[in-house]
Image 1 (cartoon, rainbow, N blue to C red):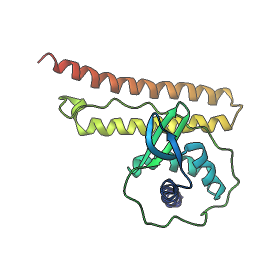
Image 2 (cartoon, helix red, strand yellow):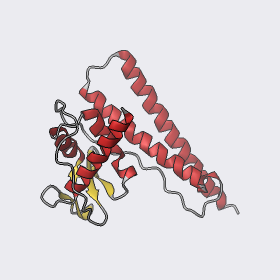
Image 3 (spheres, rainbow, N blue to C red):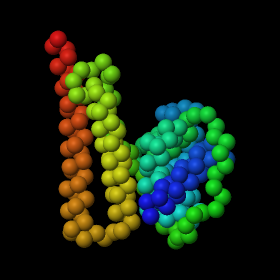
Image 4 (cartoon, one colour):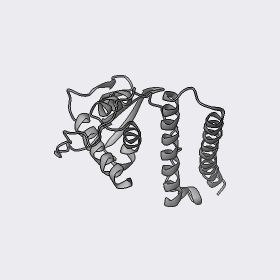
Length: 197
């Protein structure tokens, strides 16, 4: 099952890249905030993939993970809950898939969220926050944050939720936020501590 999902995710990424490189499919993101960048809004991207017949759960995971797996796929947030994906790299000549792998009912598009960006740490920083392991932890935390946003968006489509699900979402999102705060606090404090030496 996992291999099937990975295969579908790879095909979805290939399709996304194809669309992001097609001027007919993309639009100007924001001339003021992102001059020269053309992209596709996350909601539209997920809807287009749903129209091809991909299962919604696979689409959500594959689209969210795409920028971390292929660094040429970037995200630009014009304003909160308006995330655009755009392509930043050499043109890809690999043909996109033309037929969907799985037939499924098309679900409504979900809203995209703007993830919190972990604090960038200077490579000159000493201590834990200057290590590659800490940078990997930041990247993992960012991926978790993105997945939580996707879960919240999926939950919106499942309303009304029961008390158990609402409690879980409340507690889990609070824990992820706390984790992000701890990572940022360590990185900031270690940078400040360096000023003493």
